Image (cartoon, rainbow over all chains, first blue to last red):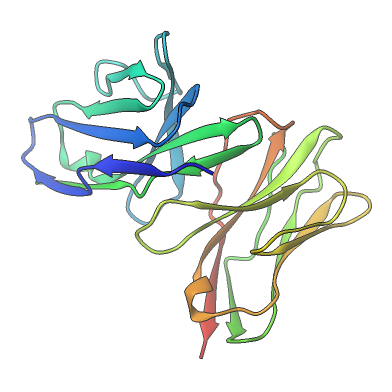
Length: 113
Length: 111
């Protein structure tokens, strides 16, 4: 398995501002993923972030709104830009240290006022 | 990836086996069945996965029917800490990262 930490664990932000969420894993992994879980909903994949290449975004998510960095094999950031109340969600990162299993971080609970 | 159907919710008495069903009638030959769970306010936790054969680990057992159109996740001795939403996910072959979460089954373990 992999031990994954996220910072911050929660935040309350004003609309129009941006928040950068950090994801740190205890081992080197090629594939990292970012998900969003809106209140009362299931998880939705935002993008896949592989080290050394541009992130790949899913339908409905764009780089200008959710820029992602992947500077090395143990770290990634997701920025939620120009936030609105609709961005209030739990944001989760996950990694795939083996080819057949994905492990998730504890999540970042974001509230936008 | 094949779609899955799960009951919305289930109850289980503490100490008894919890049997969570999942239908995946359109599953194809190279698709795996994965189970994750999400305890309230936490990230999803991997439980188990399988292709054809039944699988067992320290957390649970996975029983896949011979025609692979359905499966059952078994928690042999449910505890209050097993209260969570359980997700059954079908993936195109090991190594495919496209986890598509449905609504899952809300399991409540009752004292």
